[in-house]
Each structure stands twice: as structure tokens, then as C-alpha cells.
Length: 493
Image (cartoon, rainbow, N blue to C red; front, side):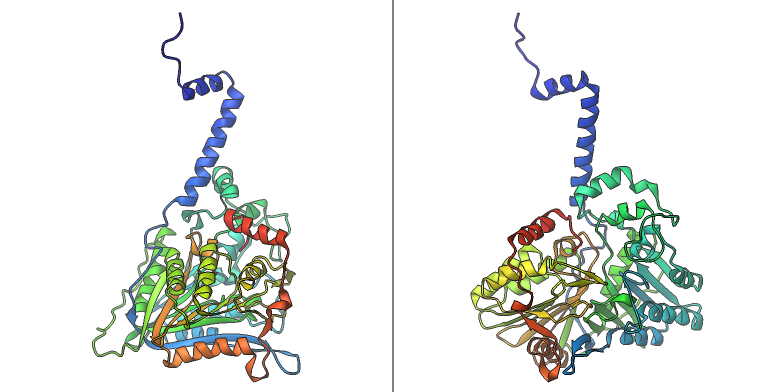
């Protein structure tokens, strides 16, 4: 007699798998892997991240530039301001110093007499400050890359910690995964293996050998990519957000930064507290008080942003731009698809768009093939957008700079750590930007506008940039490779 209620398709599948244990095990492994990989892409960010604070009245705004260029005699020259200001702010602090810095080391590429020892400059300043004021709170938040995820010793960080500086290593595993193809495997098989300084493989950044576990962790392609500082300054509080790392081999890179005082500095401090908390440290730091804004000049506003909120504000600034308005972007990486499409649409509306980019030619002594910037430039150049390349000579044009000036001569300046890529803007890395809003005739907006004009036009016998043709790349293979890498997370950008 026929079965009036035949088993459902899932039941039939389970019956087959039950009779074939090897296939059942493989099916279960694949299912767990896919669940792990997908789940950790879409999991929420830890509490306190993805911050979008309101605009605050800002005092003492200052636009800072580290610039490397080619002089008339073809020699390479440099002028620096950012870490000089960082050290100055640390030295004058009396209550609290908190630094959150992606790279703070002497490795990751060759450095020589023409490089500055930025890592020791900053660490020495922190140690000296703690020695001068033993009861003062001095905090340093770093990315685990500075110890190669436990694969090498970091004596400079150990020395700072021994001197009383509170060193917090960011717990990256709490963040979503940008490279699910590998991270799904890593979370199942390798995350719990720890690491050791007893390695036998070549160091990816030079120096002593590292373990296989270092490489397995490195392939997750995630970071605390922030570069920020908060200090007390008399009766006020001051924040600094920059594109530059306290990293010796990066010391010839071109970078920008913004300093600001007031309530926004406390917002910046709150983003740092969030990092400490999800990294397992409850921050017992002084709680700053900010004087009432009553009576303060509001000729400029500062708004602190982090993670996905940065992307939303970038898109808002570009999408709201109108015909005849100015939109200047100076970028180390541009690959995020929504932003690329938004830039193209702004150009079609008649916005005066100018795009200055790093040619992605060099990375700490290694030659690169131009991905992704040259491929994105091809796409945008074909639509008529003016593009120039930074004229680099081994260093990087490390800007993450956007300036918008509207029809009412109101300006928005966005500066910080985040590259314009999926990893940096879609919530996989820790990032911080500050948005300065002021009139176009504000002194520091004038400086930011002049900064871009000088690089675009090579003013003053300083060759900062080259025409688009200098690095044009029409390879369709490399273009679609960039698109695949950006979509999947199988990339280093």
C-alpha cells in the first residue's frame, strides 16, 4: 500500500546523510563553516562603535600637513607638522593623555637616515610624561599588528608599560570579518592556537622569523586603523585626528591632520573608551568636564565620526553637492563602490570635482601594480572627472581628505584615518574621522583649500602631482580583479 504521506525533502536528505556518515560529516562541516563565515560578516559592532556625534562648537581648530615633494633641482624635500604637534600636546598635558594608534613600531619596511624615528619620539614622550607626573593617566591603545599578533617581541611597548603607561591591545576578534573566505576557517580551526615568538617563517615586514600562526591571523585583514589623540589643555580638552601613523617607515608619507578643542574632544575620548571596553579593559580614566559653550565663538563646528557613520557622511557630502560647488578629494585608496558612483553622479550634476590620488606604486620598499586606484581612476576619468596622481618616490600619498564648499560659501572638511574602501568604511576596521564645518573664509578652511590647490597645480616650484596619463592603466584584467577583491574582501586594501 502506497505511503499517503511521503517524507518531506529535508527528511529524505537527512535519511540519506544518516546512511552515509562521511558525507554527513562533510555536510555538517560545510554548514558550520558557512554559518561562521556569514555570521561574522554581518554581526553587529561592539557597543560604542559606529559613533555619530552631533556638531560641537570648536575652538583652536588647526589644519596640519606633512608634505613630501620634488623640488626644482629634482631632489625630494619634506615639511612636517603633525607629530611635532602630537609631542607638543603630550608634553603640556597635566591630567590625561590617550593615544589610539594603528602603527607604532620600527618595522614594516626599510627605514634609513631620511626617515624619522616617529615611534620612539611618541613612546619617549609618553614615558617622560608619566615619569614627570606619576599619578597622571597615560593610555596607549594599539593594534596587535605591532607585535605581529604575538609573533614577535615589542620591547618598546613593554618599556612603556613598565614605565606606567597603560597599553591596551585591541581585541580584533570582536569586530566583523572583512575576509569571510578565510576568517570562517580561522575562527573554527586557528583562533584558539595562540601564537609564539619561536617562528621559522620569513617575517612579512622584515626582522626575526615568525610562526605560521602569525600569517594565519594576518590573513583576516582587519585592524584598529585609528590615529587619534586626546589631552587636557589648561581648562579645555583637545583632540587630534590624523591620517599619519607613528611608524618609522611611514615617516616620509604625506599626511594631513586636524586639531580641535572643546566638547568634540570628549566625544573623541568616548570612541577610545569603547575600544578599551570591548578589548577587556574598563577605562578608569579621569572624566573630563567641558565648560558651557555659552559665550564661545561658533565660527567652526567639529563632529566626531567612526566606522560606518563615516561612509554615510561622505555620501551625504557628495550627494548633497550642487552644480558649481567645489568638491576636492585627496585619497590614498578609493575603491568603495557607493562612493565611486556618488562621485560620478556629482560630476554629472555639474559639481566641480577634483580627485588627487596615490598611484599605488610603492609599499615600504615593495613595488605594487596600481590596484585599486588606477582601475578606479580609469572608470572615473572615462566619465570626464579631472584626476591627478601624487608624484611619489617610494613614499605614499597617505591622505584621506575631503573638502566641500557650497554655494553659500559654507565648507565641510573631513579628515581622519579611514581610506575610502569597503574594509575601512563598511564596519570591518576601527576608524575615526572629524568633520569640520565653517565658512569658506575661516582661516583653517583657507589653509585646507590652499593645501589642495598647491598639490593640484604644483605651485611654488614644488612638484606634488602628475597628470592622469602618467599612471593610466587600461587593463581590463586588473580592473575586474580589483572589483573581485573589493567585493569579496580578498585584498589588502
